[in-house]
Image (cartoon, rainbow, N blue to C red):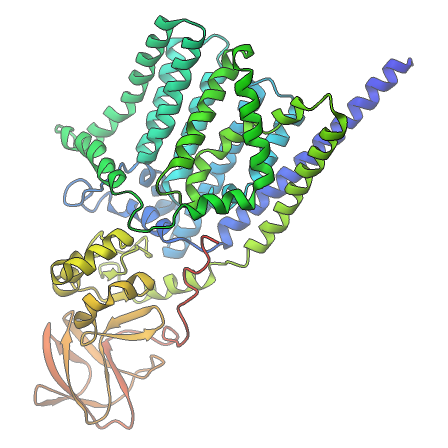
Length: 562
């Protein structure tokens, strides 16, 4: 065997070893992703967005109008069909989003290959993407953005895989881009990035007519899923649905992040946590821009797309941590370009590789530390609350924690509506719900703490706190004390101890001494506990053993954005 053959064989062995090692690292990251999906604490947005699917057969676009497109809710309908209770629906939703993330990662690999990267470099790009903390900690969440990112990457991949870009391929990419828009209105960023990249590429090559044609084909493809969506939900009258698609997102977008304040901290947070990875991505994009006229069509389109979406995402006025997953897959495509730029300087390249590998290794440690923010308390509350509600009974929390139980309103208590509730007071939607469409249960969170000054008069004499995050229709009675119980829901009531055990005893109701169970109509009742040696809870008849407990509710949503 010649020396050249031996060297080629050694290079092949080294390549296979490197590929296997990187592949194992990617596989470990994927395993961690699924562990995250199963274990990590839910943010409030996940509950309400996953739960919106329950309105498909309960008044959606009839009596209930969502201000945004509901494409994401169609996706999460799968979890409702597979899950058998509230907890399983939540976890199935997480698992299907994690699977979607795997498909997105696979398409990022395919995009890298379409841009001319070999297998090892494409795998490194995927691994680097999975090392971004925001990607790993957000891409599995049951919100609209992961679905939108999936369609956006798919749209770019269709363009990059085309040997010669033709009209039908642009229409297909536009259709996928339209699907992203139907997942979330933020996908207008993807739509704009794709359109600008296609037109800019043609303009740089001075093919202006081709640029115009590309724009027309793209808009045509984009409108197809939009039109289908409007007819599916609007039937013979699709115009109101179309109007909702346009003006609903505009109202939300113009509201901005001013109600919250300080959201720019999340930009600094993600940059600080992943600064080495961002340096490689940003440097790669800048270096690529200096060479854009030397690139082929695919690389020019991908580069312009990446630049536009990165600028739009980082300039977004509500940069919650999950927003960055909209840019990271496209930024990562340029992460190795800096290494190519310093290839002639071996010492600097070696230092760069050391920095990159170290950052990737640290990300694995950070993943393990993030597991401490678990969802056990949240799922336990969801299971307890569900067991206390019959399928036809309603609850209220303003965040939709029970995906398979109905609420008297779709009010979403984000900061905007919290401030509106405090401002409108007795005329607010929250006040109206708790005074006119009274639920059996109220699930308590810090959002309810915010509006407590408004709803306190409707809660104190009608609901009793039986757990840190659980209020139920009822009243706490002490022997001999005369109280006014404003009955929120009609039905049968009985006496229970603090731990939910049934109690014997009599209650004087409006001057009549009665034995349990008591049949109450709604409205104020003067009640006095008789023949009892201690305090008792007057509650709707049911099985409460094991459902009441003391403790703190401070950890329910703590640290979800840390």
